[in-house]
Length: 347
Image (cartoon, rainbow, N blue to C red):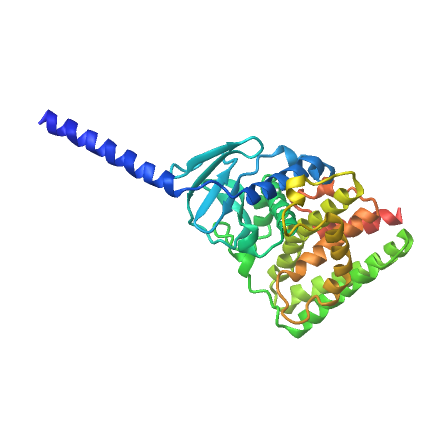
């Protein structure tokens, strides 16, 4: 009996080791180009992150990169047991891998494998982005991880828009996108921001910002009285705060990079689809008026709030406001900070 038990144990161990060896043979190392892009993003974060957001580069940011058949995990403090170490990179650290389980087109940040916020992204090829645009998007998602590490769950839940145990409402909240009056109001807000950003002096900017804020207050009153549902306006300012500021952070990073002596790595510049950060910044700045002009026109959706929030942040930067010091305060949103900026300009 003991012999049978011993043989069974030996057979079990042999089968387990064989399965593991087969699994390891099926798991290939990360593509060289993907490692180059990840290293470029991490280098930008280390070099410029704290110049925009104090403490950003200090946090640990787990990354799950999703390829066609394999997904790769880095920097996670408690990786699941089904991930196998494929290599140790001097910059990326231990790279773990397993057969793919996530969608290859994801561009997101959320807690994975426990309560650890992480970047979850498909490769540049699978998400249809050039190498440079993919790196900028990587940094956008890294900023979302920074938000989560600064208690954004608690802040967002204080709005009481959707269930705390199911954040999908952040994507599919039934905002009245097709309401013609709501569309018109939102378009007027965007037009007001367009007038603000076109000003050439701080005095002119302050005057336009005051008019914008008055329109914003009227918009808030209309939205809150429209159906006695204060959640609609809260959803608007939530998206501006979360996604609008992430979009602003992309722009701010491009400005920092192009004003410095920063040079991308030669391996990154040698990628076939590389475009310069200067070209990306110029294209971005030229696109802002059109983004605002087309806000709440055809196909009005939550992404329209990205530009509204990003431009508000840019305008506060122009006025030299230290708005970031209060950005994570539990009861402070971008519209509150615009009002505070206007009050301070009167003093």
